[in-house]
Each structure stands twice: as C-alpha cells, then as structure tokens.
Image (cartoon, rainbow over all chains, first blue to last red; front, side, top):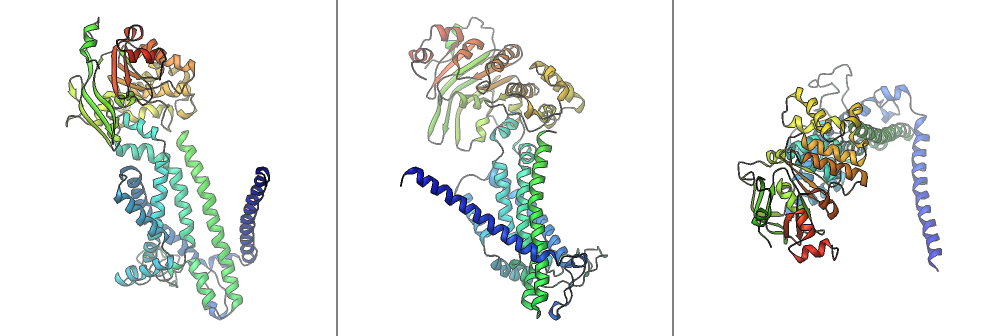
Length: 297
Length: 265
C-alpha cells in the first residue's frame, strides 16, 4: 500500500469516527426529546409529585427546585475555595514534590466513583454530624469532586494569561497580589466562568453521591415560606431533598406502574438534558461576553 | 575583562553622574552561570546599549536592575547593584518601590487588556495618585510619547486595537507616567516594523533629556544609531564597555570586533 492510499483510509476512518459520535449523540438526544417532550406541561413543572407508587404522575417542581438550590449551595462552597486553590497552584506553588503530591491527591479526589463519595458523605455529613439527610450534606459531598475540578479550571485559566501581562504589572511596581486580582483574574475570568458552568452541569446531573447524603425524599415544601430556618421552607439547607436525577432513579426503582415510571422519568430526563444543554450554551455566551467587556471597555 | 574605570578615564564628559553601578554581579539560574562578575556603570541621562549574541546575559543584566529576576524561582544573584549609591537588595528597599523608580519596556508590546486610558491610570491608582491628577498625567504621558493626537478621541477604547508601534509607545507612556529615573528597554523594537522602530528611536532621543535609558538590542545598527555607551556581552561576560563611537570604530577587544564585523553572532 502506498502512502496516498493509507492517507485516504485514515481520512475515511476519522470521518467515520466523527459520524459515529455525532449519530450517537443525535440518537440519544433524539430519543430523550421524543419520549420526553410530550409529557411536559405546565403542571408537570409546577406541581409536586403524585404518589407514583400507585400510578399517579404529578409534577417535579420540588425536585427541579432542589437540583438548582443544591447547585447554588455547592457553588457557594466551591467557588471561593476553588479560586483560592487555583490561584495557589498557578502562582504560589513551587514545582516540587509537595506540589506534585497535591496534584495527585486532587486527581484522585476528582476521579473517585461518586457512589463512594456518597458513602463517605453518609458517614461524615449524615451520621457523624448528626444532621441526617440534608441539602448541606449533599452540597458538601458534591464539593468533594467538584472542588478539584474548579481548582484545575482556575489554575489553567490563570496560567493561560500571557506572562507579558504579569510582567507588565510587576514592572510598574504593582505587588504580586494586586497583579493577580487586578490584572490576571480579569483576563482569566471568561475561562473561569466557562469552566465553572460546565462543572455545574455535572453537579446538576449527579445522582449517586446524593442518594445517601441529600436523601431520596423532600418534605412538603411551602413555596411561600422563604425563611431558611423554617422546616418547610424550600431554602432551608438542613432539610432532606431529592434532586431531579435522584428522583428519576427512585421512581424507576419504586413505582409499581412501569407506565408512570416511564412518564415521570421521560419528562424529567428531558428537563435535565435541556438544563445541562442550556448551561453549556450559557457558559459559552457568558464567557464571550465577559471577554468582550474586559478587552474593549 | 575591563573594569569600569576604563569608561571614566576615556569619558570626555566627566561631569556625567553615575546612576547605576554593579559590583561583582553574578547571576546563576540553577546550575547555569548566566552573568559573571559584571562591573558596570551607567550614567545619568544617557543611553546605554547592551549588545551581544543570544544568551549572552544582556537581558538578564537588565532584569537585575529592576529586580525582575526576583520572580524567577531558581535565580540566585550575588554581588551589589547600587542605584544613586543605594544598594537595591538592602532590606529597606522593596521591589515594588524600586520598580516605580526603574521602569521597564518589554520586547513584545504588552498593553493591559484595558482601555488606553486605564493602561496608564491603573498603576497610578495603585500607587495612590490623587484622583484629579490622573487625567493630567495620562494626557502628559501620551503627549510625551507622541501618541496623544492619535488616540485622544478614543481614550476609552481597548488598547489592543492600536497598532504594534502604538502599543509599544503606550507601554513607554505607561512607564514614564510613574515618573521613574531609569527606563530599561528589552529589545523594544524587535517586534515592530521599520517606521514604528524609527519613531521609537527618535522618542528615546527626546526621553534621554529626562531619563537614564538602558536598551538591550540585537540590532547593532540600532545601538550605533541611538546610544551614547555600548556594552558588549558574550557568554555571561561583559567583554567591553565604552563610548558607542569608540566601540564601533576602535574596539579594544578582538571578540567585540569579530562580533561587530559579523564573524559570528
């Protein structure tokens, strides 16, 4: 075989791979959309769930709210620590054994199976603290694998800032810290925002780590009560909360009616996919917008 | 190696005051010996050019003068650097204060990702310049680098929209806005076209009236055109320093002559 022929084959092969990936994606998304979209109604989005064990469908309002609220709680914990860690790794950590060890630890942390993190969360955030199943416990469990991701995202975004920018600031007698906060972070911000939102997509879809930490049920929520200390308030972080993905799992394993399970999980899966897709698109748009804002005032 | 009294002896203008002096300056990056026993003198309100082949240590020496080498983890500096008689490594001297006094312009124009105005105002604000003075200093700095007429109507647009030559002049404006006494330039025109280069060279001639200027250049014609003193470096040694005219016409060292005549480099 001559080089030209091999080149043809290689080209063909890589096109085939690309088409395979696209087809899988379209097939998967198409299946979820076609099966899910017909179940979506205003009631499905705003009503609490019915007793699905007996075949009532109801809605997914509390689960949808829980998913978003848990995401926000996780981000409140993750963002400051993640940005701090990223700045440390990019600007202060010296290239030595300790730093290598730290990096290894973070890689292990982010690649732990999420069910293991769920069990660890059960021991620490549910039993040891005596909180029981809570949103806070769920958020902390999610933090365990979201944090290394955030640190990596921030580190990469800061490292990608041209060295000339840093040198320019330092050469004007600006301190290292001022250089980081006033010159490097603004330039790195689009990358950080994009990374954070993509990480958020993963949190939003996570189920296994939440089964044993945030729990499988939600109390009856009163959406008019916004006092975070009240038991029935949606904002109370110390209440159990099933998220959308956990709910899909639960309905499928508990319901006696396969039809109900199909309806509930079909509709929920559609919503889940839509939200994650929106996150991705939003991430790109926001990243681009911030970049434009910062470069041409 | 020639020690610095050489310059003094042959200097017709002995009234020139010494601004920077290095004494037995050595720089190591890890195991490599980047600068060897440098004894250098720079005079006030003159232009000194550092020339030599790549890797000869000329940029390293430049970065010692404003302590930019502090930011490199494995750099080890021994010997003394005196600016107006003050040891810049003394405990009382902070790198931030020193760098205000000793400005730097880089090889690649590096305006901040901010507006033209902010590029200059940013560091002024950091150094607590009174708010009402800032627009005045910005205008004055831009005028001094000949950029004011070109940008006065778009001060609040991104500095990245400027051409390479304009960006480099903005970087010089940003530096002189700090009112330094010394300006270090690290191959400031190597990324620019000939017309922009000429503008910068002319600008340096004017700035010489107010600042002590050190320029690293790999273009020896540039050194010949603009500098008062030229120092030739080779493999971490300062081979020779003297009046530019003397270095280019009657170099004392054969190595300098070989480099200038294009035998290597």
